[in-house]
Image (cartoon, rainbow, N blue to C red; front, side, top):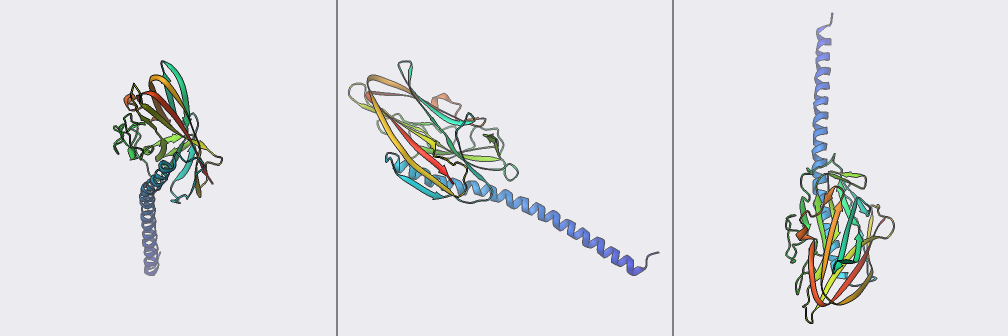
Length: 277
């Protein structure tokens, strides 16, 4: 038979154990909430960083040899990867009179957070446009307005040639993300005139320069700018498509295909190297 003192001690022990168990439960919930919030805000933080990178790429796009180095923001909640594979790529085609004359392919730079930290449903093809524009160059954040081709026109804005799009839950090249950002290049098309005008098609592509899974330094280099011209073709059909994991960046063909006119049309390919280490 237990004494009164023993019963009181046992009650205290049980109460203490209960308090500790509840405290542990609240700590787990709090840590999950903290990780969730931190992973969510890391997307905004990295999107801001990548916007600065895209601004710089646009600025030096026509300057071969320029090399830009950045310290990668360390969020501890996400991972960076350059991907160019059957699972993530962009393709650009230029067609003249039914014949394909240019095929350019590009990889994409990705930052994503794991599903156990933060996850967005995968019901939409693109969840948000952090940096991009519609076809005539006006800024947009709406995926339904976003275009993979800027132009055509006598003049088209060049400030959003490199875009940042956020996707929901998905797997890219074997890595699962609750949500992820993709840095993608877009075509710039400028019309000339049928009689004597000069048209231009600018095609930037991302190329790996080696290690692509580092966590500290991002290097961007304008590797080369090459061009050739076509005379008396009158018009060219330009198409871009990007597949990233299970996502097709645009399902509306009207936003990734244009006709460029001109008596002479210059096609300019810009190779942009990416390295992480």
